[in-house]
Image 1 (spheres, rainbow, N blue to C red):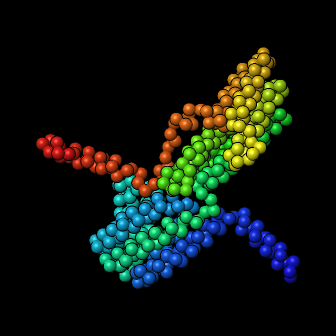
Image 2 (cartoon, rainbow, N blue to C red):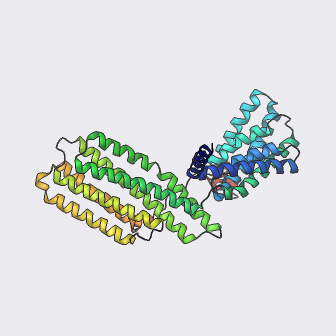
Length: 402
């Protein structure tokens, strides 16, 4: 029995440790909902359920996101409650009330360009408000309870994740870097041994899946940067550097996908690659893999990591040697294969530029901002748009006042 308990306890500890972020977020969400239930009941009679629902909806993986989504929840609450009251006033209570409320919420959300989070909260809040016993006083009480739940969720969300936004950015970049190294190693070994079309297709599929990680890295890097601007314990310089590294990771992954596509296209050519060319490509890919691995060490603070400039320069030198040796064999190489092979040099150079952050494309070109905020358009932009529409409808004599 004692041995069984020891094994079981060890398995449980391992299971929890391997899923720590999920476990912590789940526990924090549960506690936040419980506290919201108690506070909601204390402040508003029978208001605990609505407050608990709002808290569970609003707790997210970070304080920054919960503040943003909390305001979206508040805004959605006001719109949803108003839509519910208007629908019940015009249609009474029944099937058409529910349908009308959802349609009205969708129209209003679309008209004022609510973001994805807030748009999702609008119909949910409307259905909560439109529940049994609807009246103006009940609607106000439910709205108050929703605001209580959101406020509690914002406080508890600080504890919902074991790491800061900067720490999560490092983790995501490190995970993408590790997968990039593994894929480059596979391609290097495969090219050296003589790969098949099936193998090249597998590499391309893995590269495409790797590219799908980029939106998550970009969103996390943006969160770390915006978090550092207003949270006193966060380092702004560190967040800006991580943001640049996130963009660099995006550029690196895109080049790896391009390399995988080039190798796949080469596998379709009956002429194939010469043995010497395959050997040079294999060495270049191995150099890229080693360079990225070294860069990931410096990202995590490993003392054995080399300077990023040294890493990048070695990779550029490896690319130059690779293309020089390929050109020396130009008479033995099919022209189409030669063009594809030389294009790999450009991919390797861009990876090198990304590793030492020297490319102007990383630091001087802004990445698009995620469109999941409260409003897709700022209030000022919406005001100018509405004013322009009103002005177009006015008589010429009155347009000067608009």
